[in-house]
Length: 431
Image 1 (cartoon, rainbow, N blue to C red):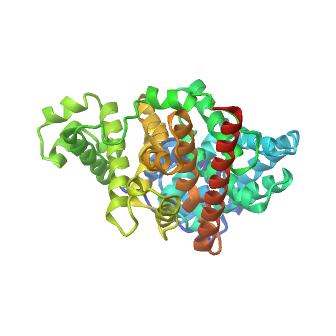
Image 2: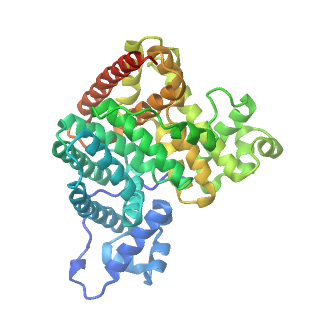
Image 3: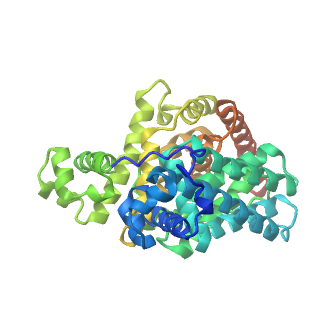
């Protein structure tokens, strides 16, 4: 089921008497209940009946205190933006203890990502992702993104980096602020994130270069990531049908029977390839990834897999990631991940989404830059993450298009320099 559109940030809250002046605390209870429901189950879970039941009020109290449920949700999101500002003030004080260096900036990134997925940060993180996914680049989502943009620009300044480096920090954060909410394998995922941040910092912040730890490779293997093209055609047909079912009916509508009807096959055929619901969700995810690849090859930009030069590769990526609107499969993928994050039994399916990033870029990146092995896995994984986040990281800017172009240019220029420097280091060391 498509997500409910977010109400405008500027919407008022009272049809008559200011609600803040009313004597009871029903307004506060309704706001708290709605905020928790959005964080726990998404916007679709925050129905008037559910909010009222959680707050211990009648449903009519929503209209009395806010005018309608849309204004209540507007208050929830607006309040969450302000809570995030306060939350970031605490994080900024914590970061003051770090060394003023590119390594210090990398540690800051790791620290904030870790804190954002825990305790009160996690509630805000889930609410933020609901805003960004439901109404990307507009209203409260754009306002909230600007808070993060300004925070990371300030971090870059405090650690002696250029403002554009703050934008690159923000891009990496925007990606992992969603996918680091995973609870699949905390120890392995923490090490994989550390490995990716170290490589990110070496490529874009001039931090010391460190050899891959192997965690991303292990995580991909453990999550069950399959090489592009390795899924049998019959299974991929069903996976694509599963992706369409999720788009139409949401994750709750994803059943073997529904997928069979959409794919035009028997239920037995579906269960043959995807025995459990978790297998089916993972299949839907692979269908989403395949849809993104197919879409990239069907439009004006050349498919990434066909490119053999650095210039050709980066120009194709530019057209893909600086478009006016985010790709629909990207939004569907985010929604599916959010649904998986909220259901412990689907943690493994969420890991497929998280660690599939970089898979479709890997072959051409290896061909163009002469990379292979764990080195190729790391470079593709990190580059894919910052590229995928460019649209979202710039969504709150006055001129998002110009910002995306500038950020893309910085990312690709530094990537080329970083790869060249790494090659020289390897040659000097005899590797």
